[in-house]
Length: 438
Image (cartoon, rainbow, N blue to C red; front, top):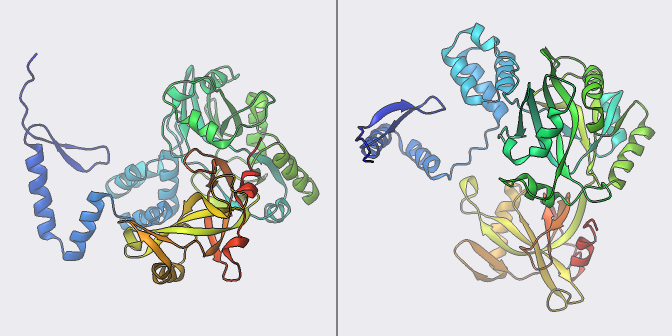
């Protein structure tokens, strides 16, 4: 069947900005872009070009943008922040703040079926230290899984990620669990992870592989919930955690994350040790009287998980982009293989990359130093003699077929360079592999 011809039409995209579609739209967009760049200064043209090419890294956090919106619209910051948190859409919040009425902005509320930004946690080195900040708290296992927010309205259930993406079709087992709960409407916050035959958590990458699948697989994901934001027409955001946990126990007790309410540091440490022994990441210490601060990171929730540090060797360094253009940035990291289990004895086995934790001073130093020990280079990478030891903090390792040692670092970041250590004193691939859960 022949298609009807269409002329270019001016519309608006989901963000509210003008867009064109149909025949001739490409010409119209090119003309509009030429007109825009003709009006722009040289610096503005550079900015526009980087945005269009995906090379612009502004580093602007949502909190900064939210405050900027409030200032530009002359609206109270607290009102704008709450609207952004409860709508989960900063762009729509900006449109409403700038073009809508004050009443419309203030009326933005919690809606079952519309995800909200999750409450975030600060960090502490020990459970006892966290408890000293929160006072009486619920000390809960921090699962090594994927965060989910589940909305149920009658029989309709939707599951969202921490970034508010709808993944309902990927998690039918979670949908089935929530449909069976003794409630009509509910919003739950929690995590999902895969378990082995003994009920212990499987490695993180197995959970994420299943979590990212567009179709159900044999591996099942088990939901665990640690908070409830709404129950049958009643919003609980501003209720204390003690009230929310009571409701959570009532409607989803069998799927509640393990934990204890205490003001005793010894009890908090015991729960932390129990969580680690069970194969979980650590604990989250939550002030028992705190409300649910959607999208905010404060001192009411504090996560505690062990951080491992290892001395590894720099094998190569990649040229940076954005604000790091012209600087050597992303490090290739290797662990010593003294026995030759993964190659020649005494060589280094690559276990991951990182650009995190690098200060401006370290970036400058790397850029000056690594070319001095360069052994070869490609367009984007400078390979160096394996003589430089760097202390790296990691949250653990995971199985990986990408690297010859069969593992990859998790959340690696630079702590410092170790001028006092020789490369043959670096940590071994066998030491890192021992971190794998068997």
